[in-house]
Image (cartoon, rainbow, N blue to C red; front, side, top):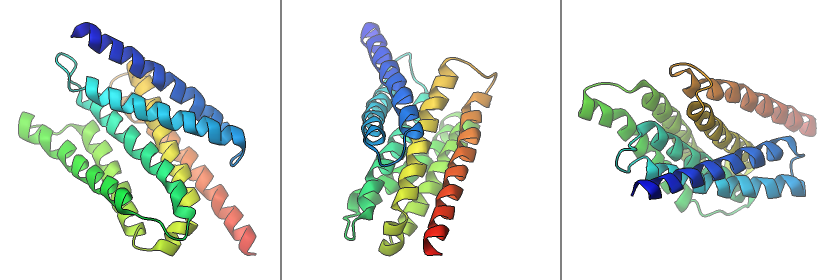
Length: 214
């Protein structure tokens, strides 16, 4: 059993490494170009596989890790919703799957907050922060789904923001595993830096939108 788990960990790490490299290429490449799309697809599938394997390993004997499980959930949520945002540019989009994903994320977030309290009588600050972020994004998605026109106009922001969120998750896992920062700082520093990058791109896109209207 332990050998199988080690193999899964190596596979998880391999796909995680591929995702980091492909994601970086996709971020740097000019948006809409072939290299951006291809590297983006490699990033998406690598992140999905790495996230799923991480969640499996995180519940196996002697490898239980709520932190790894949380990162796996976030990775899947962000890259999955980021990829599905590409569908929103169509005039008519079936949002049943998207709504289900948001509901699952909200439910998972609530459990991430409550289960440590129920099982250990304590609050896990890392899980709480991750849960709150996931819940906020999911609730925001559900509200946006009620306005198809706004959703269609904002598909690019959703795609960019969620994919960058997925990349932040992958970077966080890499930082934690390699212990680049002491204590729990590594869980938050990539997110803080990534948040500024997302804000930069959002402002840049807003300026382009204003320029087009003028």
